[in-house]
Image 1 (cartoon, rainbow, N blue to C red):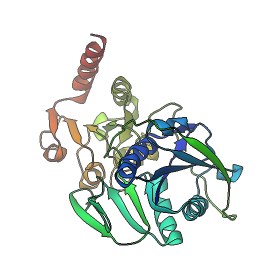
Image 2: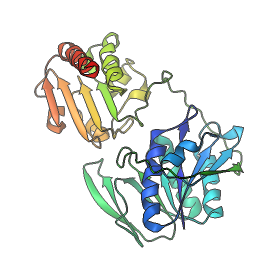
Image 3: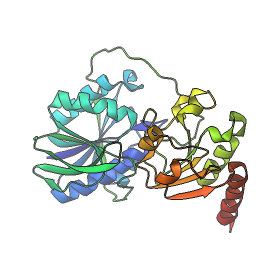
Length: 318
């Protein structure tokens, strides 16, 4: 039995979720005494994966695979699974992985557990804890398939270094031609993505206009965080839709989520509920977000945020 992870990359670097998957897979592989394998697409700098416990990486290279398409990626991963006797596949909870997982599960006749938040409680049958009801509760999922897929919730396990000597193999694309649509996402080069961020700073209509978004960006820059926004903000065109978080936008599972001028509609709270610590800054003491937050500051964002940035910078320089 082997364990396979799909190691996602972007702009020539492995995403944080890929390294977290490697750490998670290493922990399971140690329990079972099996090999941890990674599959990557058009990515030759594989040594980083070895730092987090991967022993073998299979590089699938083809110009047609430069852009993610769920059908092609699923076909190639299915081929790797069958050729290497894999019994457990690990995916992240990224948007791409959520498209990929059901296609892969069908193609290899695998059980599938999404939103997993911990190590398996048992392996035969596979019993595992996962979040449900838009992260308001947990359940234990039992899969009795011979082959299973786990999608790990982002930031639920963390990065744990366990260096291994890693070897690399190259494999050609096995997928057939398929039609696909490319999505153009507006994102500045070097900016931290919402999916990979440990800290997310989000703004709502309380910022009063796009000209005040420097408050969000300055705080995010100080904390090394990603920036996000509520649905009304993206609907009004203040920020790109790629930054919209919530039930109808991108889900967030950061270690710290800071909401500034966000009232806290139920759809927004459902999408960020997996975040470990939630801090809200709002001038309205009756804002619904205060009931869901771990910490709250009642105050004017235009006064509170600049002072917070100043204090953080002073602390970092002390």
